[in-house]
Image 1 (cartoon, rainbow, N blue to C red):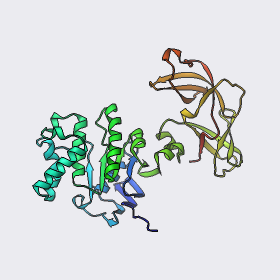
Image 2: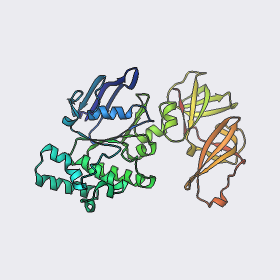
Image 3: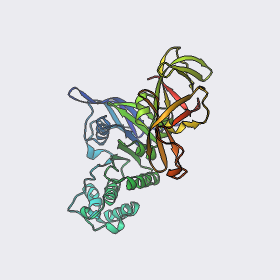
Image 4: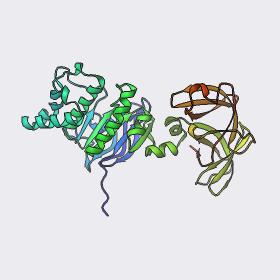
Length: 364
């Protein structure tokens, strides 16, 4: 059986600026046809990593291989990649068609081929009617499509996108996410996206590398990185999460019994790996896994609380219940009833419960 070589291989790549380690010893494989996201907070090193892939920065150490070829010292214009910048970087004096054709002219493509490729790219991103407009005559979403068409016109093996949807409003951004996914699936081009928006990464990506302080915190599919975060940082960064500190009391098969000194109660959590007795861990419970129950019998995985805050988001509401002084737990409920008929109100006492199989344990 032949194992396909990843289209991108980062081998112990680091980038230092004086004493600052912007990227710190990252090794990573990205496969042909992936929609891959580099996700993280501002200053975590994700854009520096993208710029090294593009050839705009040179690693302090390590190697970058693209399609099996060492590209570490190869200049940007000789790499089989193209980059779509956050600012779009369109030429203001050129019309849409000329902006898209610019890279093709620089490559020396003949005029007829340029015309055909530009027409093909405009049809691909649905901007044919704007061919003769200048960038200032376009909306933000239209400029974004022009920049995407220009980046794809040279048919790169890899398209790098730096916060590609950052300039769009929320509704347009959500619509464009699905368009990008469908476009990438049709072209089968490898897309590598930098974003700080977790929802954007979760919606579009086949895999996500969560970056923290220049290192990969977790590398996984969107579903697994949400359901099974590897660290407390990953749990807090991806989605809403409740983290409760407890210590291990016992373990039988895949059920671990934990005790919280702070809350004075026990919890049962499903966990497949052995844990040392008395080890301190964190329990992660996603808000949507928590249910309001009529029971009030101090059962395991049951907490009483007082509603202190309610955030109405339309389709769902987020409730913040105080379960002990200074400790709150978040839970969500779908708004299937009109707001006036919502059963939970401020300062109401509630009893919350969840299954041992709908929460997890974090030891780091």
